[in-house]
Image (spheres, helix red, strand yellow):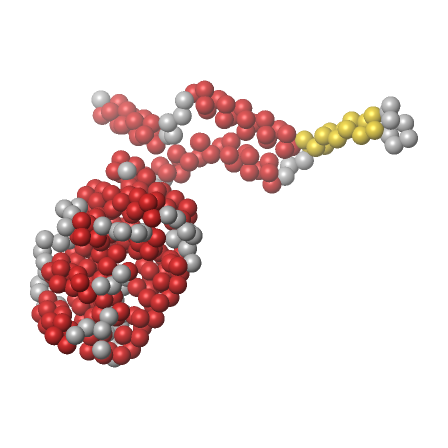
Amino acid sequence: MNNNSNRKVNQDNQLAISPNFSSSLKKKYLITILTLVILSLLKISLKSDKINTNIWSFSVELKVTSVTLALVFLLWLPVLLPWFISLFPQLQSSLNWLRQQGIEEVETSLLKIKLRYGVEEASKNYEEKIWSAGSTNLTSEEIYQQVEKRYREAITLVNATSDIDSTEALKRIDQLGNYYDKVRDEMPSGKERTKLMREISSVMWALIPKTVDFPVLAKLNSDRGGERLSAYKYIEWQASTEYVNLLLSRAIGILETPFGQYAALLAIRRIVVSNKLVPTQAREITDILNWSANLDYIGGDRQRLMIETVFTLENK
């Protein structure tokens, strides 16, 4: 009984692994590949005599080329792929889980947005150079110069991206916001989820400059994390002191997620770098960030960003 059960489970697993092709589609695939293999093996020539065009010669040469080998590989691919995946149970379970959660679709759509609108290089630069806090071993003046330089380089890349109209840019930013909410709700907490959310955030930032009349207040007050994230990216681009108090409350408030807190802190840092603050406002930001950096629920990444922002303020 146990052997029968195990056999049935293995059969079910094989079915789950195998591509879901119809029998007619499999037959057409095999016939097409076999025909191409045969044609690639044969070198057929038909020649006529230059003097007497009535005399024709026909020859067939059998030759194996790299094209033939590639086609043979494609012929065996439907068999080899399930076998290869079955050797790696962890990879198989991860792929199945991603498909079930729709995360594979999110990643594919992200790639399409990047490539279609030319924001891939700009978003990658933002993620690598700006997203993370710098070294707190530098002096306040060095930190300020470093952050300012990186933003200038990132803005240059964004300005060089392909042009799209505001309506399309807003539509894609909303789509990215939906992706963010989906990833946050459906993926377990960990490095993979954070990596994907960072990528979404970076592409948002690269698309923001293409928008006109961005509804920043409506997004800031939204109950959806993806929409709030887009508002933080907008303020990080259009660094206005108007939103400092609200951003401070979001950066340390427990009603915002840790990822949202970090995005709000990035916007605060950009405001500090890009604006000349009055002494009272600079002191208020410094006091709040110094106090918040010692809270138990503030993680190391947010703490480092707070310290860096304070150092930058000290230079100004």
